[in-house]
Image (cartoon, rainbow, N blue to C red):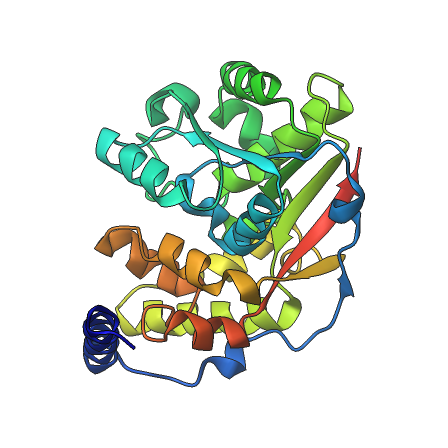
Length: 297
């Protein structure tokens, strides 16, 4: 090891020690998946290697970032599209994605343009009965903007969140994921496959129980997840069809997660427990798989 590498190693060790000293280190294995699903083989058989992540918010792709990075290294051309945030956050998203995909797109609509209820809801992430989606969301405008981006890239595979629970219940997650299915069914976009990023039952149960307990300890009701399940009439996210091992992408995925500012990282920690406390290789030796429901169009 030369002098420069020794200094780099020492600096990295110091950073990790600082992180561990500032955060409570907990056994994360209890949140890790215990279920086993079939390894995905379909993506390796597709000739048109163009994939697009279609989501509402930039951080919605965190649960699939390892798979995206893996595909990109295997020669896939990959784009992502989401609603525009602030100029600073959009720039941060572009910089964060540069090592795991090729193109970052934004739908330039303000929240007040695509939602009609922001002056009457307490929190925009609270679940909404699906029968109210048409009144809450400006579907035609949203579809027009997303179709423009999707057609410009013309992916053979689209990655989204699930259209039943939207991960943890956010109505914009559910709505955008359902739009993708509807547009594909209407042949207004032409993906052959849709991969919905989901958690296993064990992951979902343990991680959301942790989230609820933390919210209650901070004086909040902590019942958002249970309320969302009741409103959507589901027991949680759909069950995965396949798993993809992403351990080889540990460093790239961790770099992506840690690229967010402090507030976003704290929110990510709700659903990716203690990711800032552990080194990438150690963390993703535990969370070494990502899971997907696969829909053939």
